[in-house]
Image (cartoon, rainbow, N blue to C red):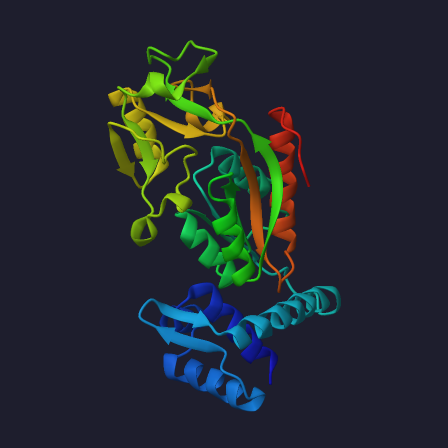
Length: 307
């Protein structure tokens, strides 16, 4: 077992593809496959499993990777200290539901990095994919919410995939509407008052279960419903069609401007926003810095930070 082989394992996990990992490592795919096969034979375990969707870690591979990352991070620190090597590129991968505050925290975290090079990924994606990304170590952490409706189902998934949910803050549901919407000036809106307006929700792909919806109360009957795949399209439809979506009420005007406003929804429902991590890994420095910035922004918006 060599340090080079351990770095190969990390790169393949990051890429989710043997071909892409070989390209980034500047070696041939057969050479990379042979190195991994040699490592697997030496350890007596299967690290990766090939599927139609690409390369995934096996349960043994997941456990092995948690040790690999500890070794490679400490090796990088030793090389910087005693061999005067340039600091390694900062790597961070985050998966999240469509939250502007997560994007804002990501921006601020990048500005605080003390390095000229970095390789970062922010995936605004579907709920099921957030869970899979963290479980398969494609992301260090994932941001999503729990409610009375989805909590039991999602917590069972977290337990099955050895994930830990850490709460960040609790929010009363709001709706996002255009600043020109007839209900925009209200202090509070009842869900029945929105019946004639289109509800905009993020589509969840093949796992389009109500339990994975990002929008609280999305299971309530609605005469008009539009599925979208990204936040920019959703906001354009809010403005163009007079639609609405349910949300935490946290709206970052630096990113979204003044065209969208949040109005509290009259309901006893609550949204517990938090993040998931793997039980088998520890967060790197960039991830920890991102969480610090995220908590700072949450507190600035008047919410109590729960962790």
